[in-house]
Image 1 (tube, helix red, strand yellow):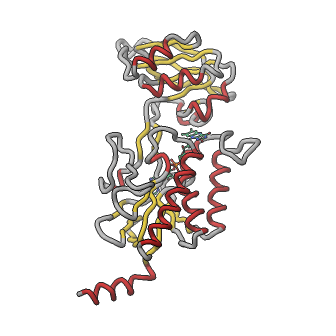
Image 2 (cartoon, rainbow, N blue to C red; image 1 turned 90 degrees about the vertical axis):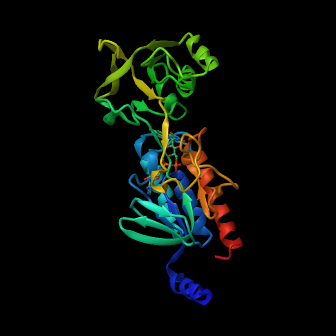
Image 3 (spheres, rainbow, N blue to C red; image 1 turned 180 degrees about the horizontal axis):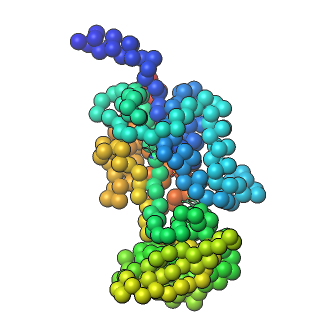
Length: 321
Ligand SMILES: Cc1cc2nc3c(=O)[nH]c(=O)nc-3n(C[C@H](O)[C@H](O)[C@H](O)COP(=O)(O)OP(=O)(O)OC[C@H]3O[C@@H](n4cnc5c(N)ncnc54)[C@H](O)[C@@H]3O)c2cc1C
């Protein structure tokens, strides 16, 4: 039996990858770059949104190395090119599921099975959008889900924040550094935000809080976002508001469904690191927004991608793969 197992391992040997990276945002490409330079011949599944969330944004001004700023898609193209130069193999496909119950691990994509000693999960956390009329065209332009990223584009302009939790209060307060006026709308009159965060926003001279208001429709013209139609959910009455920018702060959904509960998560679904960047399953690492409940920036995702790659490389060496 033991001999058979060794024979099987030898037979499969050539077909077992050292590491499969799932997801092609800044975390995935950085992990790809490091593992490729470590001669691990990594395979990446780039997923349904090759390049990740930055493909949705026009200008990135806070990633080091681009003094004039850079378009999100252009930057992601460069990260991919850099990793591919050292041998990262990229497949523009989704991973449908994984089997982590035994080694080598199994990764399934479009009906095909891939075997691997290690996995780096970098599938990100999707921002929750409102999904109302006029939103799609303005995503990453007039309408954002990240004030830290895009607030500075709205100097001396009027902006809207949607949400009732701590992040909505934080985004609204942060935006007062740039905007001439910040209107915060919430569909109820009860806030999830902590009292201290609510008070800070509510007492700020530049912030107006409107309760029982939800966005019914975004308004725009050739110049970009121009306003929104707000609706009172109690009676359906509407009002129009003029603005140049909007920030939706109603949360994120970490993308972990394809893992089918095989990795430990917190109550919001974010993966949990157990030993540096390793998850509760030995040999499976996680990087980027899928583990990050706090920062959610390209540079922090890239940093975690680097850490996961180094941890993975050491783990493979210690486990003699
Ligand atoms: C509109 C907008 C503007 C932003 N602007 C900035 C900015 O200016 N500066 C900044 O620092 N940050 C910005 N951010 C935040 C930044 O985009 C994220 O923090 C960063 O992209 C997270 O990187 P990540 O690698 O963890 O995941 P993501 O970039 O989210 O990438 C996740 C990847 O996983 C893949 N994937 C998901 N499921 C699967 C699957 N089943 N199989 C295979 N692949 C899968 C997707 O295809 C995608 O490639 C912005 C975000 C948004 C939404």
